[in-house]
Length: 278
Ligand SMILES: [Zn+2]
Image (cartoon, rainbow, N blue to C red; front, side):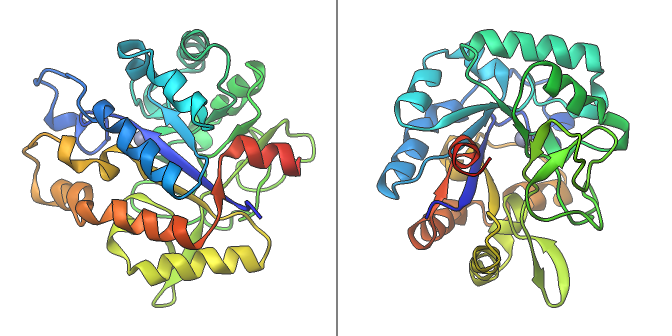
């Protein structure tokens, strides 16, 4: 059964929030984009469909990656035009971006992920904007509080979200929310679902958490960044120690870890899950 959900946050080397302040003066020439075939190949050999949450300006730069994604049975979703935190946008700007991306993706995008999980009480207008533009789902809520983002006491299975109810089901909500998966590590709740955590925690912690979701009949929802899967396309970036650690720690292990996860568990795109369950 294709129960679990895989989102690839597709962005380039200058997009991650922690990197942005340190690469302002460098020329933003996309490089990670050239690794997409390697990612598609990993998904092909593990017979997995995935959702590519795309930074819009990359589709502008190389429109052919849309067909590459769709023709290989994957889904295109939206990750803002320039990997902006929602805290730096307004509803109006976001609506404009949704229109631009709609054209770039031939109207195929129905799902959204906020960069750095920046959907919060101050940016909940994004939910209204997504509903206005006929989006079907969002996957931006991390049900554990970390330094950068996240919520305590959040529903862990998919629910209908609204701008006044970000963490639990609103019967009048019009958008499905797929919260990211969390697990426990030494008794502490942690995001097991991707990025730094997937690279740094023991792989068994992630695998056990995915199994636990499956036993509860809840889709495990994990995310991986494009640049984590193809670090060979990442240029040398000078970062302070902490940013460097969070961005690059164990980066070369991401590909093989994801491969092991996909060999042991079934994952699919959000679109496929929506079709089957809602
Ligand atoms: Zn991102």
